[in-house]
Image 1 (cartoon, one colour):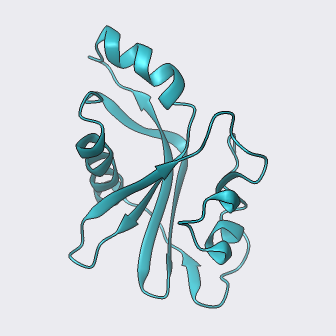
Image 2 (spheres, helix red, strand yellow; image 1 turned 45 degrees about the horizontal axis):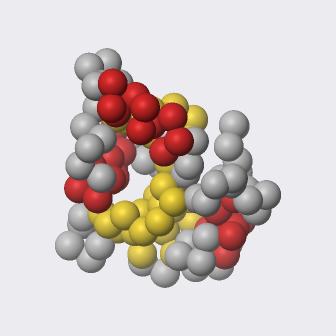
Image 3 (tube, helix red, strand yellow; image 1 turned 120 degrees about the vertical axis):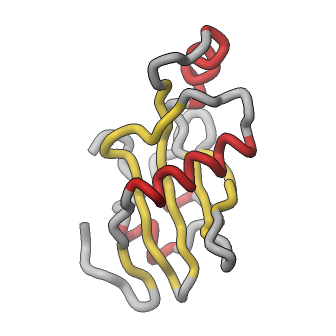
Length: 125
């Protein structure tokens, strides 16, 4: 990853952050219970005191048929989140279909400097 940019920096996402982001997605889309962030597809950073995360999700063991079908499309889209001042997370948006060439650089809710640090959230890193 590139070096930090003025006002923005990469952070290391531990299991607690990943679980909280997953919980925020489940609250927005309660039909997806058996999911986890896709390994190698979790981006986490901060700009001017505000935390952001981006990830794709995959089905976990125990996923229902409906979850597996739903994840065929949803699993290919990167989801974007913002950390709240109270320490929680809120779901912001997802990539469109098909995903644009600019990746998270095209997502207005993610600061440009942070998407640059994340190399525009490449799909398969």
